[in-house]
Image (cartoon, helix red, strand yellow):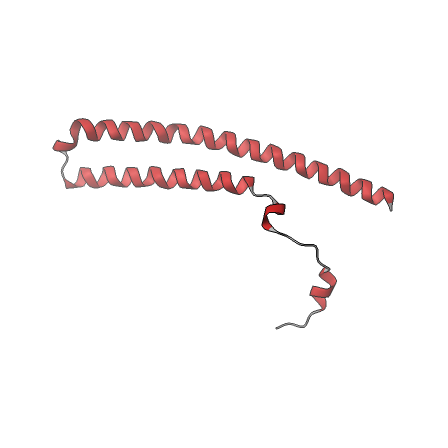
Length: 107
């Protein structure tokens, strides 16, 4: 029985290590992905500041669509980062006997 407990502790430790590495990777990737979005935002702002009076309705629509895409990408990256940080303990999981659940009649 002690051997099983030791193995479980070892596996839990490995899972924790992998989770930390995964979170670090996602945060690093998110940082790297935000960089080109920041550059695009600055370039669009400069384009608008310098040439907006010359824009026709199509150009204005394209700029708005680009800005919307930038914001959507930022949101996706931030969501991925939040997902990587989620911890099972924060979700309020509780131990349960799956045999009892499996034996329940179908509803």
